[in-house]
Each structure stands twice: as C-alpha cells, then as structure tokens.
Length: 632
Image 1 (cartoon, rainbow, N blue to C red):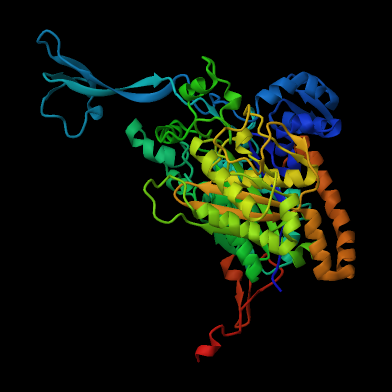
Image 2: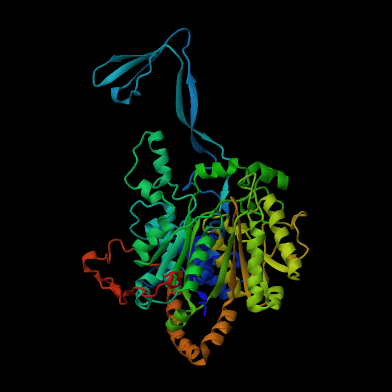
C-alpha cells in the first residue's frame, strides 16, 4: 500500500502577502470576496505592511491613533492595493530611475601638461604603473605625475529599462521580526515562510517530531541564484571591486542550499533528510517531487518543502534583461501605443506581451503521509500523488522551450485520469500555468494544453496564471502556483488574468478557458501545477482537492479511524483559527532557534538495534533486512 502524501499546511510571502489561510490568494481575487473575507484581508495586509498594529488590545495606526477594523479599507485601502502585487521597483531595492554603476573614463593630458595629483601612499595601485612618477610627501602622502592617459572608473547612474517587479508588500521587513544578524533577504523571508507554514498546521512542532523517528522528517528546499544581496554572493563578488573587504559570512550565506540549512538549523531542529535541488523555474516542484517520492517509499513521514528567492538586484535584472527575457519600458510602450507605462500590468501571460516580470518570495508547504496526518488530526488541504520531471533533449539555445513539458503534463493528466476517472479531469480540473508572459511561452505552453485537451477530450479547460500578479519569483514560482491552487479549492474563485485585454491571437485557446476577470467556479477535483523552465527544467504536479482526498482516505482507512480523526481535528482547527487571528493582527512570533536546543553529541546512545538522539522521544531504528538477499 503506497502512502499518500497530503498537504497539512502552507505558509510564505510574496508580492500578494502572506500565504497562510490564503491571504495572498485573497489579495489577488480581492474584488470577488465577500465582505467578511475582504475585511480580514485588508486587516492582515495592513499589519503586514506596518500601517496598523495592535497595542494594548487596540488597533492603532502609525501615529498611535485608534482605528477600527472596519475602517482599515477606507483609511488605507488605496495604499494597501498600491503597495502589493507587481509595481514599480521601490528604492529599498535600488533606484530604477538612477541605477548606480561604474562608468569608465579616460583622462588625457591637456596642452602638453601632465596629470598631477596627490593621494595617500597606501592607496597607490600595486604595482605602480611604469608611466607614473611618484614623489614622497609629508604625512604618508605622495605626489603622482603621469605623462600618459589615465583610465579611471567613477560612480555614475543610468536610467534602468526594467522598472517593475513583484516585490514583497511595501513596509514588510522580515529583518525586524527576529534577530536576523545581517542575513540576506532571501533567508529572512525563509524564516518567515517556514514559521508561517508550521503555525498554519495548527499542530505543535515538537509533538510532530515526537510522533515519528528523527530520521523520518525531511527538509527539501533551494533557491536558484543563491543569496545575491550584499550579505551573500552579491557582496562576495562586488566587495573587492568596490574597495571593500569580503566578510566571513558572505560565501556561506550565499549558497543556494541555505534555505534548507536555515530551516533545519534555526526553525525545525531537523536531523533527518536534508535535500536541495535546483531546476530553474521548476525548483519548488523538484523539491516537492523528492519529498513525495520519499513519503511514498516510507523514508520520510513529515516533509518541509520550500523555496526562496529574493534577487531584485541591478545585476540579476540586467542579466535577465540582456537575454531579452524581461518586459522593459520600450517594449511595453510599443504594446500599448503610449508614452506612459502601467507598471501594474507588465506581466501579461497569454496576452500581447514582451517579457516576464521578476518577483521575490518564499513558499513552504508541510506534507505528511496519510496515516500520520490522520493520527495527528491534521487539517488536510490536498494531496500530491506525484510530480513529474523531464528534460528537453538536444537543444540549440539552452534557454529555449522544448518537448520535456509535453511529457510532464501528459503524465500528470494521465495519472489524474487513472486515479479519479476521466470525468474529473474533463469537468473538474484546472491548470496553474507557468505563464511566464513571454511571446514564445504563450504559444508553446498553450499548444501543449491544446494537444492534451484534444487527447483527453477536455473542453473549456480552466487556466490561471499567478505570475500576472506576483511576477516570476524563479525558485518558489511553482510554490506560488500551488498556493493559488489551494486558494481555489477553498474559495471556489478562479483567478482570471486581469492584466491582459484579451488572449493573444497566436495562443492555442480553442479548448482553453482563459478569462480576463475572476469568476466563481464549481468545486474542483484536480489542479495541475505546471513549470516550463529554461535549460530544459520541466515539471508538473498533480494536486488533488481536499474534499476528494478525504473521500480517498475514508475508503482506505475506514469509519473508525475517520471518526477518531474528526475528533482530533477539532482542536487542530481551533489552533489554526487562533494563529490566523494572531497573524492577521501582525503577531507572527517567528521561530528562530539560534543555538536553542543544540544536541550534545556525547549524549547520543548507540546500540546495534537503534540510536537515541537527545531531545527526541523516538529512537532511529536500524534496518535488519538485507535488500540484496537474492545476491547471496
């Protein structure tokens, strides 16, 4: 009997807001929410953005004035809307209208005179150029005379052609929420996302750890670029070129494994599986696949699946921009026949577009095997029976799309059909598209869906595209898609693509349902999370809705176990409601266990049967079976 990996919690942060309890999803479909959900969403975003906070049991604004929850939208609504989703890059990242760079300049002698200047002796280049004449002065200074041209670099600025991104909400700063110790922004976001995910389960983490063997917990996470801010690789690479020193932390903190390492070391205290794999835009799904496979094989019973990326730096943006991958000012002006760009509409999946819009964020999902989830009373948000990964074969351009995504999507649809039947796929499935907003993607990705719809007799196949709202967060992008899918399962609102006026003429949309407005939908059974990454990194996950998952669990486990589960689930739901209320009020209480609960290796007890690790109730049992018995 194969264990079914089920989702029991999800947390994170992106341009739409907090992931837990669908806050980010609700920001996207804000105008389709009922009054209660809309008010909750504005409250949660207002506290997240530090516009409102709780003091002595009352909500107060930044000036200390008391404000009621029902006044938040009228007071801060426009500011909250403007400070979320894709928008012009804010100056806490860099100034897109005056982006700093080092400009080369040649200084030449004038009227047969020489170039003469004074400086500190310690600042002379090594070795001193042969054309320089150096004269010692008092006070450890020197006078330099140069008879030739002098090449110098000086600080300058330029108008950046890429001006929009899916930034974390204005005012949100995870560095202020815990002792972040000059950590890169991506790792700060990871701490927030991991805390949000764990608390969203409604389960005590120590209780979860005590319920399984220590080696049956796993963390699966990665970033793609690594940490490219000044505190990571960005500072490592730039420091000497800018006349500064490399710090002791920049190399280690820059590694793309660090989101995994930080979750293990500072949040969960995990000693089980630790796993990092990167696959461009499919990175979250790659790590999800590893977790799903380990759960199905019985190696892992609790999986923390994550990805983070906060790479809104001039260098990364210029790199993507010079690949003609990003939507730039001139391209957008041509599309709209205007002189003024609407930075809210730079990402236009399946519409007339000119490139993707980069984003930042972190996403974390908590998965368990079905037996453990039921025994703990965990709230089940869905199931992931499999994730498929395939390459593109031989290429010319390494970044061009290829056939691998045909394989992943076809396998995913075929699996869903075999588990739930053809009618579920035909009538109650939808796609969370990669939808990167490039002209090439809109044609190639829609053609895959069209051909599969023909094969499986699907009409009006619903398609949603989160990158229209939060941008392309790279590593966690498919985590953004999963978060939207869980929101649809919960709220029955299918997000349209409101950043486009219409579906582009070259999109293969005959069998697809791509709308420009959000709309109510019936209960969905299946979501296909699709990632079509450059380099040949393609992945598709089949995600089963919670209502269908519960039917499957009832069939497998029987009435008594499901009855016991329902009783245990009541306290879990109460704990979830408590955390949701606290999170909406800005009380996140980030988990950051710096040095708290370190394991004394001298206290580890080892026998030939098992190993007991201090701080864990259960021992790690050694296998006694020989998997290669047939070979002896």
